[in-house]
Image 1 (cartoon, rainbow over the protein chains, first blue to last red):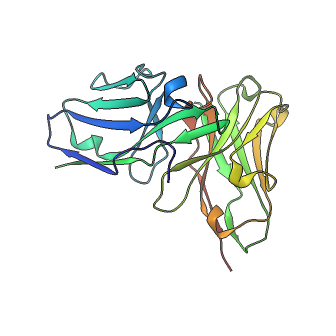
Image 2: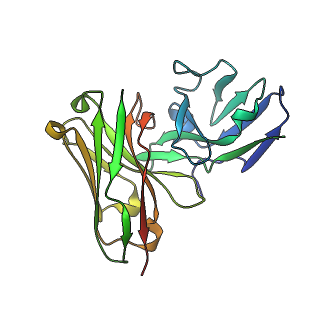
Length: 110
Length: 119
């Protein structure tokens, strides 16, 4: 059972917009920044979004992040087949004094 | 090229020990917090431990406290994870990672090394 809650799966067709949610509490998302990672099959994760809504250089602007209260969202617009991957949110948890991840969302491009 | 390369994984019996190493290149290790993150087969990511630039501050997930020790040798550009009293639930791919921004941030990941705890 992960501290941060994500839907286990999401799907969309090419060109569509998909949103993945990450729900937490006041001790994590509510009091710190949210990061998002993309993990393609068989590879190490990759940083996608940092500090709620910032994109590292090289990440397409099709990817965007937002946060409101104790929840965060990752939106992917103009969906492409290469976006098919697992997506994880992460935050610091003050109560646990540690980093917590969401359980991951497997995105399927139909 | 900025790179992290892990080694030391393998098959170990329950109760055994293993030491993972991570060789850093392309950047100055001593200026970064570093961490280990693991991923059990078919499961999600789990943060294991963080260490600050000079090794004086260390943080662990509760499930490994007292069993795992994170350390570093900046002169050798290396990060380590000493794992003792291993359990079946420690079976995972272990990633060495460079912290970016906040404690939950990682901008460079290794390719991972597999640890299997089984009799």
